[in-house]
Length: 148
Image (cartoon, rainbow, N blue to C red):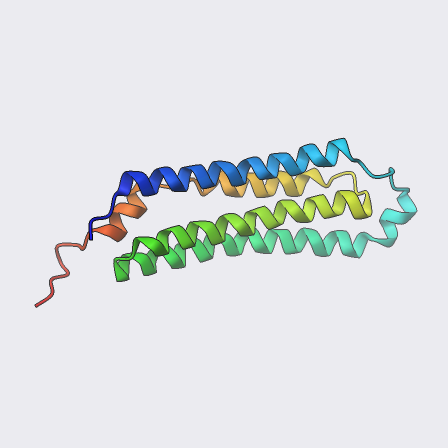
């Protein structure tokens, strides 16, 4: 079965761009439908929740890089291009969840620095731009791997 690397790469780029735009749309939504400005007392009472959401977002972004690396190495070992798609998608979704946590901070808590989680999610997703090399590595067996 022949693997069309160019089509698969275009598909990955389209998905990457759509998920990056979704983070932008979350931010626009947070600007259009802002909650009441929270008093400092309300934010102080929810400070543990704010810290927990921020730490969770940071952990998810870190895990996204690990998940992608694991899927990419497995795709090369198994010579399975589908694992490249899965790895990128899982990683991007984890970055998207980080931005959703920022939206949650904005709408539920009214925290003013909620946009930092949008920046975190978008930056992590931008760093995980789909590369053609990953698809090529998973679609061609190396010269050292010969089967008898």
